[in-house]
Image (cartoon, rainbow, N blue to C red; front, side, top):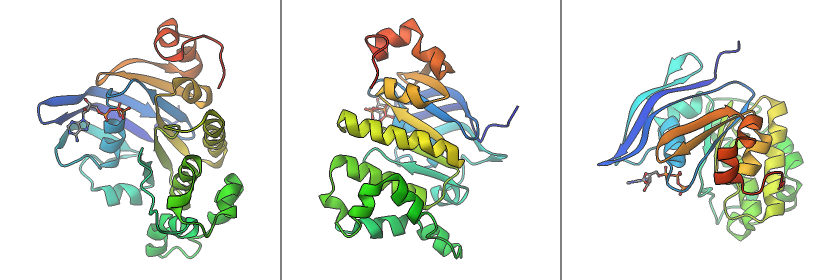
Length: 248
Ligand code: ATP
């Protein structure tokens, strides 16, 4: 069996007295889309931030995070980025006064610094995935619609050619048609060798494109399984999917 690209073992995270994650263990295999679904406050963002090494200073993590063959839980965030891990945070964190083009170029900054001559080679593929960004190259990021901002955040991440792409609620606040478009692109990335760890409240959309899923509830893993099986699980249907069979 193919070795996981990411293995989280017994990960617990505290913010002072609040335990946000309790003994989480999970795996992501190369080329897969893995979703973590769960309600508000379940600890989903905390999980991604812990894997990225980007917890707030009040956060304290215990446990191991293995990326390929290396334990990375003590590495600073820059070192994790250099290994090929990328997080698109819920707040997108774009530079709003800078143009679409300049935001994309920033996504390639690390590769440029590392001396990669072809550091802009992802620009055309990103424009192919998101033709709307190409039409708006000179527009300031702050003037984009919510959906376009999410496309830019994803596009900027892809400029860094990550091996493991972690997405924190890419559908948050977006209209259903845009959600469909974004999820279509995430699904299409699978064919390009990118592995995706997806955190979502939109369980239906997430499970539809995923290979495997985890359900996180109040800091603990409540369920896991193949995405299709989870989508058919009565407990998941009742709590997260509502009417069975409805599509996005
Ligand atoms: P949401 O979907 O609302 O973003 P989530 O599943 O991503 O929720 P987290 O943001 O990881 O959940 O939060 C998990 C728990 O940790 C919550 O109880 C939250 O209040 C708490 N928490 C998160 N960040 C901090 C922080 N910086 N300081 C203190 N507590 C925090």
